[in-house]
Image (cartoon, rainbow, N blue to C red; front, side, top):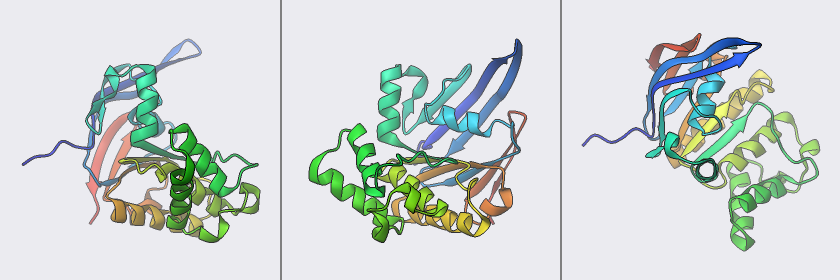
Amino acid sequence: MLTEPEIAVRNLCRDYEVGGAQVHALRGIDLEVQSGEFVAVVGVSGSGKSTLLHLIGGLDTPTAGEVVVSGRDLNGLSSKQRALFRRQAVGFVFQSFYLVPHLTAEGNLRLALTFQGTFGERRNRLAVEALERVGLAERIRHRPGQLSAGEQQRVAVARAIVHQPRVLLADEPTGNLDHATAFRLLELLRQIQAESGMTIVMVTHDEELVSGFCDRRVRLRDGVIIDSISAA
């Protein structure tokens, strides 16, 4: 029996107006991502990678086309419904860590869970479990300023998965990390995928770095997919 893809993007277009000029960020993208797949979307700056990711995550709305994630047509959702979708079904990791500086690692995760409507002992347990999962059991009481860049990004990953989403979206998550630390972060993402079956879409300009971890590489150029290559 054929199953529906976890993510389905059809004829997706996104136009912007910049300085009176029309910019076509995406030009009719068609893409399917299967449940449990790790897909890397690669391309140079300005190719449309982040725009595509933001549309999949419901952070932006398309000019034309449709986005269906976990069976939900995002075009049919109100702003309030889209916000609820983001909180429940998707986890986000960005190049910048966006941690609250005066809170501990555990406090940052507890805050995220509070926004998702989780409180009390369950909130505390989920926060600690997520930090243990990313290898930070000994650092849960440390604030961001007391952590290395790699550790801060691990906290950001823990925050993204603490509510156990079906889809994890990562926008240049290794951009602020040195090569060795970036490699370890990708190992972590691959481990999370293997253990949970989570679907991961990551955008990056560093195709060489990500090629050993993803199941498929999708190349974008000027808002168009030019090829899709499965890992050997």
